Image (cartoon, rainbow, N blue to C red; front, side, top):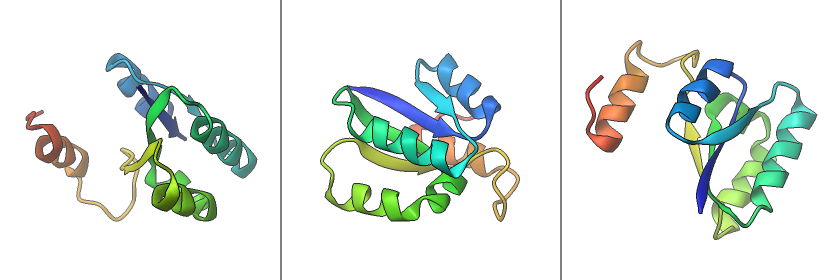
Length: 102
């Protein structure tokens, strides 16, 4: 199984590609929905990473997927441009999740 990211930021995609995670950059609502549906039906994708903003924009699609699907596991991730977060939220998130201090 592999990871896949759906983001609206090229920076996020590039950073995750450095870690070996493939994905797509989408900006329109139709593109978001199509990317989520395609990833949800791909048997090779075990973990779907999606930025918080995109997840909120298609909550009616993400919600049932999180509650009923066995795979992929849907994980909302902060974007570096996320609003309402502390300036160091992403580095703190990484430190708490995997123990790496950046």
